[in-house]
Amino acid sequence: MIDSLIIAELSKIAKQMVAPGKGILAADESMKTVGKRFASIELENTEDNRRAFREMLLTAPGESQYISGVILHDETIRQTTSSGKTFVEILQAAGILPGIKVDLGLIESGNEKLTTGLEGLDARLKEYVALGAKFCKWRSVVTIGEGMPTEENIRQNAKDLAAYALVCQQNSLVPMVEPEILLDGDHTLEQADAASEKVLTALFEELKSAGVALEGIILKTSMVLPGKDSAAKAAPEQVAEATLRVFKKVLPLELAGEAFLSGGQGDIEATQNLNAINQEKNLSWPLSFSFARALQDAATKAWMGKSENLEVAQNVFLHRAKMNSLASLGQYSAEMEQDFFREGAVTVSQD
Ligand code: 13P
Image (cartoon, rainbow, N blue to C red; front, side, top):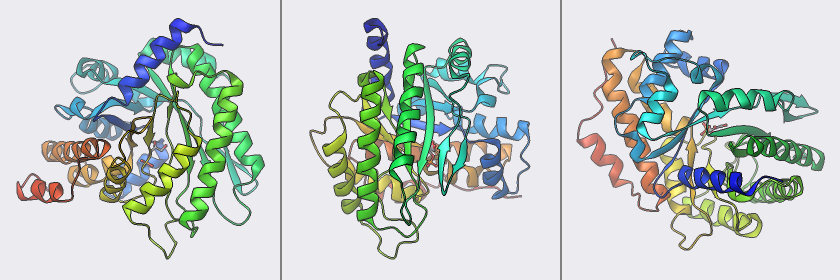
């Protein structure tokens, strides 16, 4: 059981993470994943380039209007920016909560995956607290396919997420609990809906039985979407309807909030879907964003690893952050994208 004073503190941080109009920037990609992003702009995957990339995103002026917290990678939480300050100091000065990815990646389990990192977690969390972290992330993945997800995989992932969440709360850190339902495959919206309901039902059973305080966690899961190879595409209203059906059936009222991952949706698609979900009034929880690709991709292309593109890239990033902020309030419209390009904020030097 978690001490009631700690629960009050966790609940305060969790509310701050999903405060109205705010969401989270996921900037915790592994070295390998950063390598893929850099390959698309022909940039070498060095420590200095990763630092410059994260600096571009994390020092965008005024981003705290839209961003409440940033999930950092182990490398970044220890790094210093070109100003001589650490990334954590930069975030703290801007009133943004530093978070940290604490799982150690995926392993094969038959045709499915499990997440590693429970061993030694308590000691690693104590170090992250000393480095200034206020919240954590642990990602599990669920595959939809022939006979999948299996009950066994759903249950083990739920147990591991619950065990992680409890250790976080014991260390006064808010756990972001992330079961990602992968977009890979040709599954239908109905299959995603059924998988999502099963996964979230098992997750909350395990969180409750482990004694995790639900008012001190943030759920980070997928919108309910058809697979990316599915012939049938879903309109934002259908995504919203399916996602809200599952949430209303399964999410406990005490849950502090939910922040969606983007999962490989296009950036504008993710914003449109988030906006459609937030057309529903009187929801029991804030439903916000915790995007990596849908917040970063356009800015990465505008940046190209060149310091002369920094300002433009930061403007592109701030624009996406603002669009998602508005979508989290249900106040986004497609014309807002046009206005940005008309204002001419995106002339990029490629030389
Ligand atoms: P995407 O928004 O790119 O899916 O990443 C979010 C995330 O943190 C995945 O763990």
